[in-house]
Image (tube, rainbow, N blue to C red; front, side, top):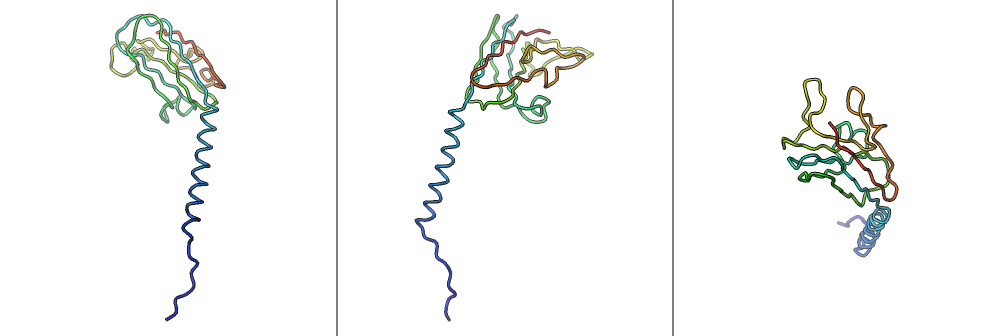
Length: 155
């Protein structure tokens, strides 16, 4: 019986396609690294060295509202005074920052019976809420190049 004709793959063609795909991925990554932005976060008014400073960097309203995880989180033991943090290789765009000083180390921002925080906190642009947390439009800022956000902790 005669076998039907089938086009044979050429092994060297598979390699070419893989090399082209790898080059495309490499170029995309290099473009992102070249266009990477740096965010400097300065936190003032740290009144005690008890507990941890917890910082979240968010890129969208969904991350800000807790519907999806933050793009970056930083946790460091608190020290009285000021602290400076840096996040690099971020893509340009809109961001927001949330800082909490978890003084008792339970991993959450404690609040009183009406929901007002008992522990120090801050948001980007030093935004304050009105009968609740600030809104995305109040905390968002544009990162294009290098930027610094100076935040003051308060209760």
